[in-house]
Image 1 (tube, rainbow, N blue to C red):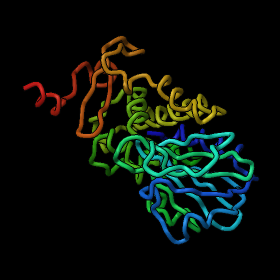
Image 2 (spheres, rainbow, N blue to C red):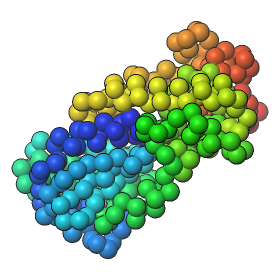
Image 3 (cartoon, rainbow, N blue to C red):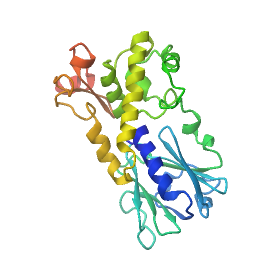
Image 4 (tube, rainbow, N blue to C red):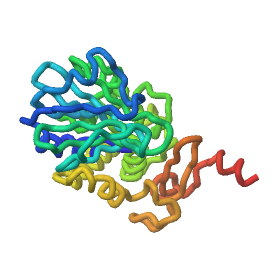
Length: 287
């Protein structure tokens, strides 16, 4: 799933490729991708792109006719840039293509989605705040005013585990499954630790890890073409997706906790005092 650093890099890439150019065609291939119908998606055709913005994990392409093309790539979606789009109309039901956007130059991008869940979303709206997911976003963790006091205020009444709190987009915008694992590893905190229980020193460590981890990932991704962002993200992860590998800090074996539709990775030595976390799903499978 693209998270804040990848979407920030896509924003920068698309700013260079789109701003000042006219969108001549918006071609939905999978009707499930469209989440708004008034104005219709075709109303964005003829717009000259004036800006590309990011709201959490949402991308907002702003046109000069007062409309915004907003997309969320969800878990299995991606944006594929093409300097020259294929001739002819794409065929529905053939492959992962969900929607195509064409410029007057012949260049453009495809939105694709692997799998069957179909959560990729496109909205054409007059104001990004009309998109429910944008309207309920919490603060951006890389904003200048996101200091330790802001983080402490957000967590003080959170009776949830840190892992879940960090992933809640209405609490903090842009952090998903992968970077929450990375942040907690950098902060040396258990993903099961109660968010409201953090001391001022722990808030300081978490704030430093949050901004440092995301900031470093943004810098690694800056200037990369869209097609290289996935591999860059994977190569920069220290614990997420690395079950069974040695921790790069202490050498202990990275462990996993599985859930119904996701999993988390952590280092017992760095984060939980050497104790493995309960993995009820795996325990049931082993019985």
